[in-house]
Length: 585
Image (cartoon, rainbow, N blue to C red; front, side, top):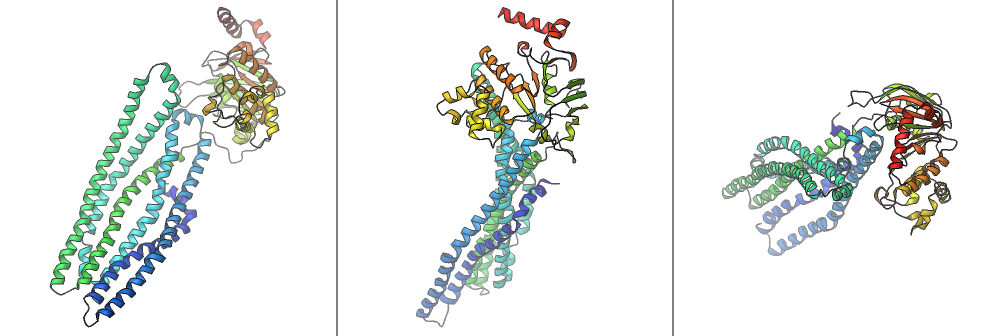
């Protein structure tokens, strides 16, 4: 399905509003078409009329102008207001619906998509490109039709006055149509290329603003300036190419629209001299030429605007049509609150761009309430393994079951409602501490928020802040320390109260004092829950019921800390290395 057809689905609910906007617009644009007729009447029937006294002429002039003033001063302003308001209302409502749909789409896209796409480019499509599509509604579905109707009404009125003059007036229309077709066929591609170049600039800028501390610490300002300038110049080149072609379009089409009045003036002047038409008719025709060719010029502008809008529509729906990696089955079930037993059955996994499997034939039975720790060298597959539990990715072989049900048979949202995660780098939103804790349960009361903050050992430091729970944490929690952010993240998991917990390197980036505090809080949270821990520091997981050593995507050892130390295998070696490193430090 073409992007324009998809866009029209969002337009359809407002079709009657658009219809009435066009109807009101016809009246709005039709009223000025009376002006040349008034001018013709004043010249032919009043000013140069014979056999009428000056007093009668003045009386007739006042009457006709009085009626005209009522129409233009009393009737036209409210019509203009209604038309403008309806047009903008419809345009903005459609944009609201599209952005709403896009945000829902954004939340369903896979982590793989986000690992391959810059945030700034996504923002560019949701904000800039969607905003550009409003012109398709206002210009393409309203203004173009109004201009065409205005032209047809004007030509109809001209035909009632003089057929020959009318033919001369529109004789250049075919040439005008050919030039539009020739120039605008290329303009859509150029517009799309320019939009993509702008999105690349925005994506690079967003990423580099977040990385300013890195740029400063490595003194890379000049290098980064060059990198930005490369992308900025690419946008400039695309914009200038687009501008060059656009300027050629206007130069040709405006020349055509300027030639037509000259032809009419020459032919009409000859006809007046020969006595075939009146001066009033000639003046009215010149007036109607403006009414015909002004909409034509607007159509040129509209065509440019429409091409840009369609290019933006293409980009919006290219993004909206991005496939989901994780999709619920038609008969997917809502398991409610699970008990928490988890079985890995011959689980294998590979990323699409990887030739070798990341995980190979993983078999592990985890009982309800058991704490399992995954350890091993970096790149062994530990984090990948736990990311399969909430279906951030789907297994490529085997199955993962919770309470005996394949997680692929569950609704993804219901599955994730049963899982709480604390990561190494937890994202906090730039709002209040209370709001960030409420991410675990948006309907929680203030008392519940305070209770979980106390359970997470966070209440004391929160109340020491100037605004307490109303303190704004800044983007990604920049105003808080690593340990404070972790305690907020743990508090919101307490508030969620899930039966399954996942800790992925939750303490690896903290100092020893913060690590000890977080460790104590994690153990409190893990009580009576099925818990998975990925840990770099082995000293933090000695309490686990079982420790699973993962190497090169395979399980090589399983047992308690005591059992694995006695075995003196891979885990023993890792533990000894870490102890030596800590002693040297």
